[in-house]
Image (cartoon, rainbow, N blue to C red; front, top):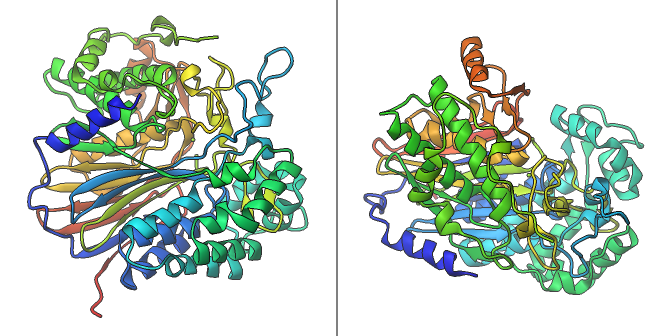
Length: 565
């Protein structure tokens, strides 16, 4: 079951290319996050002597307070780390797990049909969260500072509050009904049951107390003892199925990232239960084979866009059939990420005609917007972190456990409730991603590094099913040598196999390009801005460090010098 992980580790060890002059450092620091308070916390911790991993703790915790529509202590995520002293990359899997009482058909009615709201709204939708364990793991294994020191900025923000912004108001409005139905969420996130006005201050004293508990006792302060009992009891009273043993048994897992190569760059991304690294490798390998077949190609030409769409279509099809939790499912990772497999896919792609998704082999069926967040950090020693975190739908399940301030995720919706039936993001799945006790649901979260002798890029984005293709766009921009501001701001294009349509942002295509692609058989849907990318670029040749926050969001990016003690 685990043989593909060992293979990836071997590939990483024997890869013919490693960073030249690995001892060099950027001599500056950078933080890019989706909220100014989180960026400020990351900078504060770095300037206090912490490293990138301490800053990741601080940023995660502040986002858990100030971005309740995107992440939280009740959620999970993936951290991609690079340790400069050992030149090592590792993924920290803090994905949620299904409770021990979860069953394959728990969201189906008596006729075997899905009941979608049960996996989105309410405590039954919540998996066992991984973020508190990740905070303790990062601080204990990789950080320089005490956990409590890195958590202090979040404790302060939770007690003193943060102001309601346009994004908060928009997403709270989208989920107002479910928030109003839960007493704890109504009291914290609304104003007398109504949508709070801009500038209204959201204070979370119970969440501050929970953070203080974690600061004193580490992971056991959340997953064991009095707080764990309060969480398990509160979830069950709200209709969920958590137990104390579910919490006590939770552990983060260190996994080898997926490594691929494109245009002389090393692309390092998340491994299953993220689908990001595998899908990125398959798309880039297929697209690369098509570009070579064409004798070279502009990524933004009509043919380049057509080939990119066709590569996306096939990778998302394979995602649906094969990928899941590596501790539960055997996956053909070696094959899916191989150049030979991509070359075979490329043979079936016409330069003149779109392939209807219905014409591809059907997914075998046997008997992830601004909701989610990302940050990127680099310290002066050359350690860096890309982390994508989530509670799934905006404000997760909409339930806050009394006395804890913990807003529950609704990540159980990321499982395949029934083979071939789409989830809330339109993604379909098969048995590989079926619900099972203790299992981690498949995710699209794709924290990613892009490296060669001249560039280290650190990037990622929220956006549900579109995450992988948005990161793809950032990777392509990085390999073209474009400034990091362009990686995060460029218009986006997405295809996910089913539904069989291409989603584009305004400005992505000219009228002539769209007309030509439509003649090839592509169907389009124009969508207003999606994603919220946060990225860093260290241009090693001249030592420049750049950071950029997506203009679609409300985040902030900063580059600053190391201050003398």
